[in-house]
Length: 323
Image 1 (cartoon, one colour):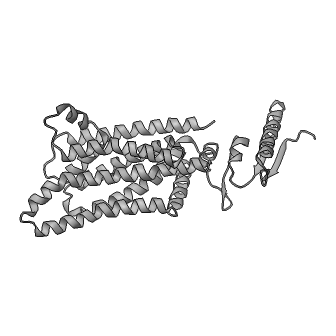
Image 2 (cartoon, rainbow, N blue to C red):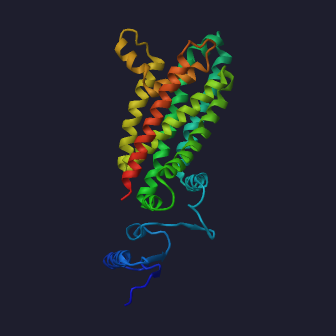
Image 3 (spheres, helix red, strand yellow):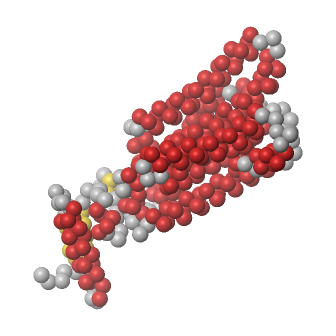
């Protein structure tokens, strides 16, 4: 056979067993390598449905949707395409919907319970005031559950379907893939968080702090969820990592919000700079009349710094996934 400058293949892997697929992949690579020494390099074009074998055979993958290149063009369009795809797929996932609705409705339902108890309490103001640390803990913990339980599924589904590799050799850059996943995860957390804050609207005195806590908390738990998804290769490891992360986040937050630590100052000092504790404090500050000087800046900086570090680590791991 002569050495063509362009070799066009249509779905070469259809109905092939693994040895034949390996042979075809090697032939494609040899054809591409043979053209590198020529004045006009050879090009191998493959038109096929989404397949894990394309990643092994191709150095660049373009996705066509409704007659147009789906992952092509401006950065925001690529990010939006990835996020939209994830959100649409998630809406058909019963596990994701059950976690999202269950967590949100459970925490929001406690607001109705608190109102019922206040109506029959001898001192409603004292009851509400004593419940604020617990309520702030519930809001922050629900946000952590949404992030650690839902967001990792975005990465795990891509890894199990071997489509993450396809994204990484598509025109989309690493940062765009990560941003698209983060945007989809943020939609989950912000949706649930806004419903919960709406349920507790009568207790929120400083809405700018409540929204600040929601935005920074979402950024942190989404970054953490993406990292957990990168560390997990199957549902079993995902469950293990999620349990470990939730324990590390929840216990300090519960200790800070519900237990007096005056006799253990060293633990109190550690918890002061713990990200989950900082999220809890932001929500608590939104519900109290007097805000201590510097508390908002300290806690917001802690959450933002932790989120940035987690995104950088996740970005590095996504880059390592590329061959």
